Length: 104
Image (cartoon, rainbow, N blue to C red; front, side):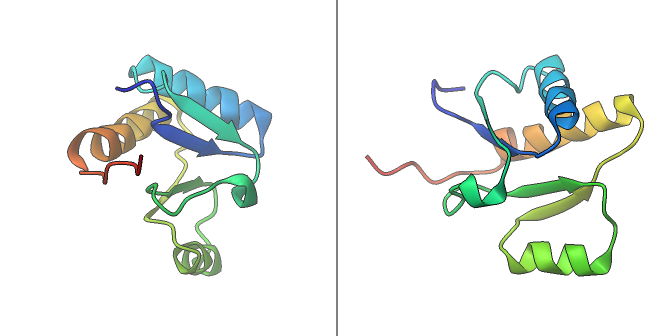
């Protein structure tokens, strides 16, 4: 990983922030994480957006994709499965996915 932010976590629940950061660190994916509490504060044009949410409502899924998310994942309740889910998300977006280089 580079010295820049590799993950932008948008989460309004402080407990979920800590849980996500803990899970990311457990899989060595949390070294370069920026956190914001509001999607409006996130500048997302050039970054993949993964919605990790508790909602399975079709209206929320459709709205999220309509707003430009790249992936919509329902948060697992079990901590071990949650951690593995974050590991898989990180492995894909930070390992397999090819990203455009940032403009100088």
